[in-house]
Amino acid sequence: MDRIAKICSLLSETETFADVGCDHGYMAEYMLKNCLCRTAYITDISEKCLKKAETLLDGYIRAGKCIPVVCDGLAGVPKDCGFVLIAGMGGEEIVRILSESFLPKKFLFQPMKNSEKLRRYLAARGAKLERDFTFSDGTAFYDVISGQSEGGGAYTEEEFFFGRENLRSPSADFIEKWESEAAKLRSYLERDNMAAPHREDLTSRLTRIETLLDKIRLSVF
Image 1: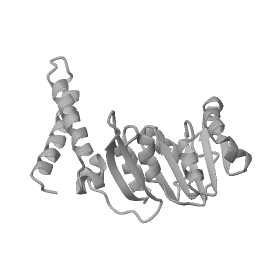
Image 2: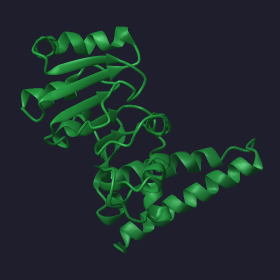
Image 3: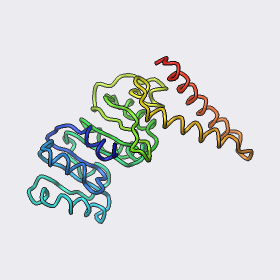
């Protein structure tokens, strides 16, 4: 499924919605067009980049249903916003944004990398992760992490690394992602000019991945 379509399919009804780093504004358009929110905030740190979304959502902006804000992260979003989406940023960047502002009541994050760091941060803040899985659009793999700010429980080390939902019900996309990652690591480890600490780190990562894939093949989960 197309990345944007997949993310839209996971959005839910709320009074106020915010798309942080909104790019073209497609997700806010989906929420407003389908009457899933009364008010949508679209934000970007660049006024020039925000213009793309403002053009798409011009009618909603003139009607007072969409509010464009030039700001860094959540700085221009009300703390009582019902649902916050941050998609297409790195996990570390999402952690920075949340650390400098607030943890939304409901959220959907689609980190491009460092998903493990984002999971650890959310768990440490007491967030409840309701969806945590991998999908592919045919060209790349993406992680989706959604939930709410309260009601969280403990995560295991393997769940932090791979994502809880992926372990409970491994999808073809998830398996393909880690088979591809394992193949890349084997290729890297064939190099002779690698520093010992780096080799040890990659070897440990490969062992972890191969152990998981073996368990999936044996249907241990």
